[in-house]
Image (cartoon, rainbow, N blue to C red; front, side, top):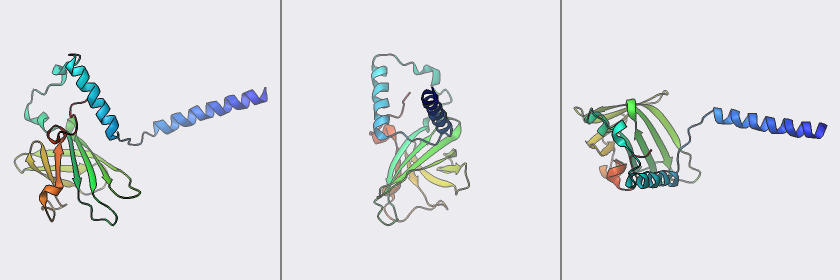
Amino acid sequence: MKASNRKMTQKVLFIVFGALLSSLNPAWAETDKEIQEKALKAREQSQHGAMDHSAHASPEGAAGKFRGVFYGYLPCHEEDCNGLKMTLSLNAKNNYLLVIQPAKPQNRESFEKGKYEWNDTKGVVLLTPNKEAPQRRLAIKDEGTLLYLSDDGAPLPGDQDRYLLQRSDRAGNREMHIH
C-alpha cells in the first residue's frame, strides 16, 4: 500500500512540477522547420479554399502593409562569430519581437519585445524595448526592406547591403501570412 501511495505521490508531484514549469512561460522561438511546416499547411489550406481572409483584411490600408516578419544576416563583431541571424516580427498594435542568434559556437538566442513606430515621413522604424535597453533604429528603404542603423541613427560602417532586413514575402524564403 505504501509503495503504491509513494508512486502516486511521485506522479502527482511530477505533474504539478510540469505544470509549474509550463506556467513560467519562457519565450519559445519556433525553429525554421516549424515555421516552414506551418507555411506549407497554410498554403495547402488556401489552395483548397479553406481560408477566409476577409475577417482580418486591413481596411486602413497603409497601417497594415508594414506588418510582417523581416529576416537578415548581419555582420558580427565578436570573436568567433560569423554573423547575426536577425528575425524582426512587426505585429498588430505596434508590438514587435526581435530574435537575434549569433552564428558562433555556444550561441544563445536573445529575445526582445517592445513597441515599434513606423514613421514614413522620417523614413525610420523605431523599436522601443519593454525592458531597459537602448532603442533600435532601422531606415525604411521600402515597405519590404529595412536597413539596420547604429544607436544614434547613423549608418553602420561598411557595405550597407550587409545590414538589410527583408520582409519574408520579399525575401522569398518564408511565407509571411501564417495561421
